Every structure is written in structure tokens, then in C-alpha cells.
Image 1 (cartoon, chains in turn orange, green):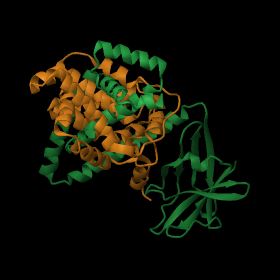
Image 2 (cartoon, helix red, strand yellow):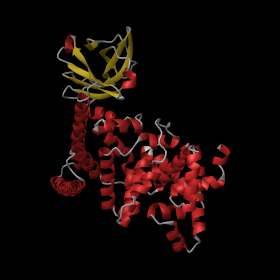
Image 3 (cartoon, helix red, strand yellow):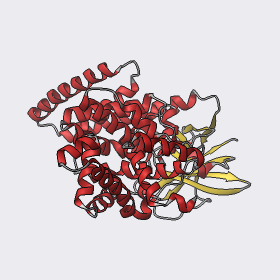
Image 4 (cartoon, one colour):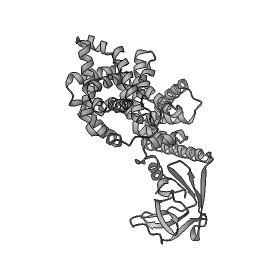
Length: 196
Length: 244
């Protein structure tokens, strides 16, 4: 084995869970940051790009998110998956940038409602590659009724309140709320046991 | 409660909480229910994971290759604040652009340049990891010495309590030809357990990580030479051993 192979082996161990990598990260191991970047940077960037519609701003935000992970102790593995945390933080910061005001605390409070001292086992979804996860979610989203998918996306990616969505769609607020909630519950149903 | 938990009304209330669209009356109901039935928090967690999965459905797009280097560099220099980081990012892009122009102009294989840069970067990261391990008060070193025709070889296995990996650092160990590799063994109660196959680089150095779960019963270490395609043989030629 030459050194190139050795380094590849070190940085590419698929058996290391996110929680193990995060522990290594907090112990000061820079290579853990590199592996987590390889795992999640594309996802973080795609989300930032979808919300901000600007590749430069999306890259800046991606950088901010990973340096935040490196420097801050905000993430607690017992509270939920790392991918969920990164996505929630990215969305929150991106929408803040979009609105030019700070309101991310609300999102993070919701994210961290449940705090357990034990780590939950990995779900099949968490064990899958980025490509597999993308395929699962695209299929699950495609199976949603159009109106449910549309209001979910308007709420999630555009940061619109349900009142704003109701106005844009010229639909009663109660109906929009129901579509949005049903959309989320149906998405869970469509993803089935992958997320359990 | 299990039956109650799956009622449509409660599920929609939980979905509304996760989506952040509860009215003040619904929010008050939710708080009361959560106080009485703390298991609702598990349902909240599951739905939050589903909500957080939505971005996986986005169209494929990738950040620029420079971004990774910029982030890793910024992490290595903690004095950089966010503003400086942003400037650094811009500078990196500018210098990257200049370097790319020179690369094209000179006809140099840009891939090779980037690959070397990434390799140096990765090497620095691994060295930082080792320094971080050595700074831990509970890091244990197991020394290894060469024998017979490998008497110049030496090195250490570094282990830190609570960490999932050990680091094997060796030097003056000749690189083996294709088809052969070194095999690290753990010896416990005269039983040899195969840990990791590896080879040294052209500078006769080894720098690899080993899953600690495989080496947790570590008592004594030895290294043999193996044929890569054959099963590990504990009686093969021994080239290094520890003195634990």
C-alpha cells in the first residue's frame, strides 16, 4: 500500500457512524470534519442553493455551517441525527438570510425538543448513501398529492408562512394548514419503515 | 396512550408543531399533552427527521471543489473569524483562478496539481490528529522494533481511551512489492488475531488508522509479511514486534 491508499483508507471508513465522527471532531480530529464534509456538504449546499438561489451565497453558507459544527457545541447527538441538525440549521440560516433577520432560535428549539442520553440506532435511511436517500425521498415526494407537495415546498424552501401561502394560492388558511400537515404525515407514510 | 398517540387529531397537532404552524390555542393544547404524555416527544422527533429529509429530493448540484479546502483550512486556523473566513474564501478563489490560468498556460495536468494539494492537505490533517492524540492524558503508546533484516524499522501504535481508532506510525520499513503486504497481529494468551494488512510508502513510512474494537484486547503486537491474496498466516516471517 502506498501513502495515497493509506490516506484514502483513513478518510473513507464507511463504518464510522456520524456520532463517532462527531466525538472525534470534538476531540480535535480534523479528519473527522473532512469525512463529515464528504458526507453532507452536497446536501447542505443543495438546500442552501435552493433557498438562496445564488451559488456564491450557498457556498458561503455551507462554509458557515461546517465551521459552526467544528467550533460550536450546539449539536448534541442524543437530540437527533446529525443530518437532521445540519439540514435544520442550514434551512434556518438560509431563510434568515433571505429575510435579513434572525429567527433561527425557533427552528432550533423545535429540533431539540427531545433529548435522550442514549443514541438511537441508525435507521435504514441514515445507513443509506446520499444517492439512495435522494431516490427514496424523490419517490416519496412524487407519491404525494400535488397540492400537498406544493404547500410543503413553499413552506420549507421559500420560508413562507401558511397565511402567505393561503394568499398566494387564494385558498382558505385552514385548507392550507391541513394540506401541509397531511403532506408531512403522508411523506412519513410513503417513506415507510426507512425512517423508523 | 399508544392508541391516543396515533389518533388523526393528535398526529396533525404534532405535524403542526413540527411545521411551526400551531395557533395559540393548539400550542397550549400541545404543551399540556406533552406534559402528560412525554412520549409525544418521540413522535415529534420522528416527524422532524421526515421534514429534514425533504432536501434529499432536490435536484443534483455540487459545490465547487475549492470549498472543501477553504473550510478545512479555516478549521485549522481558529483565529479566523467568519469575516476573515469569507475573505479567505474569496482569496482562495482568486488565487485558484490565477493558478488555473497558469496551469492551462503551461500545459500542466491540473488534476495532478489538485491531487497533490489534496494529499498534502490530508497529510497535515492526519498529523494534527496525532498531535491531538498525544495531547490526551490517557493516550497509550505501544513501541514496535524491527528484527532480522528489518532492524532499522521502528514505530508506535497510539491508542486513546474512549476513541474508536488507534494510529499506527512506522518508519524505515521497506515498501513491499506488489502481491505482498505487512500484517499487524495482536497476541493475547498466545492467540494471534489478525488486525490490519498494509504496506509502507516509498519513503518507507506507514501512517494508518486501525479500528480499536478489533484491537481492544491488545496485549502484544507483531508484524509479519504476507502474500496479499492469501489468508493471513500467523507463522509467516516476523519483521517487527512489541515488548509489552
